[in-house]
Image 1 (cartoon, helix red, strand yellow):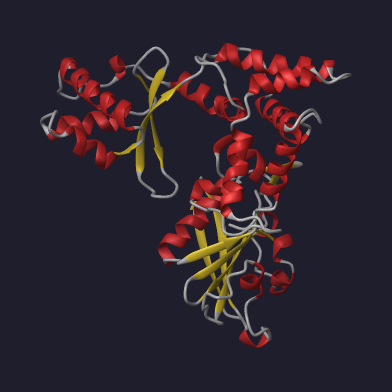
Image 2: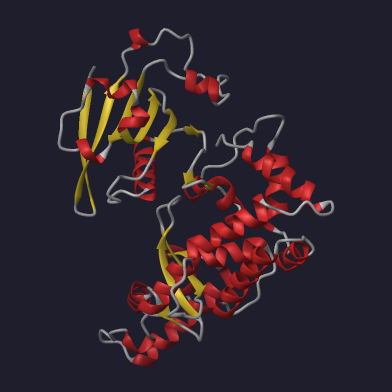
Length: 373
């Protein structure tokens, strides 16, 4: 088999990426089995295809074993199959044993490859888990998308008659559960005092750290899951006074920031180019505008707000947005443990009381039957 090695330099580590040309003679099926499983046989795909994989960390310094394709899931961190006419199947992804390559790192690599290879379409079966937690359900309830949705993957097909409309309805029902009413339902159940006490404790803990009350289950989960990152941003945030002037007066910098912050407040996340275009008629010269924008990262601009600068994983553009940061605490908190507790208690153990139980169970089953993206 023809094999190519590409060495990727990421975070000081050298990551081997192997590309293996498929032996067409070893593929007797009339069509691609991955296309059949994903129910996309109607798409005409080339029979010539390539396997791409990042092997497990333990063999990064070794030659590729010819038997790796006999069990690619057990021998790789990332495994994809690409048809010659640019249709692909993402079949396996897992973080490295040492943690040097996270799942997000690997998805960023694959996303970059898709853009450079001009991949037309990608299928995958979302069976992502963290421990025993189904991430497509946890992320769906919290963010309204699967974990893979960060890179633009969306619903493709469901099982047992579930279509996209039923999926979206189920998702909305779970996300919009009124968290205060949920607690009241649990209080009606006998022998659940300890569970209700813990649930109330979790709610109270995060209400103290938030600037606004939680209405829905989604509100609570998003706050818990994003708290560690946002609290780090708050700790590392710089003040307007700390921006070097570089020949500009402090008044010029402050006035430019007011214009930019007003745009972000009205428009939400904005790319750097769009931000320059929106502010160019109000700020001159252009060099001042570009300089101030370049300094806007974790910049305090209010009592509880900072300007965040992030790269959009779908567009690869740098985006600026106003983020509300939580109150800081010195309390040792297991944030992910709290999120999993809320998720498992409300979503998976909803009390068999009233009609809501049937609705919640139906919505959970619907979402679990939607794994193909």
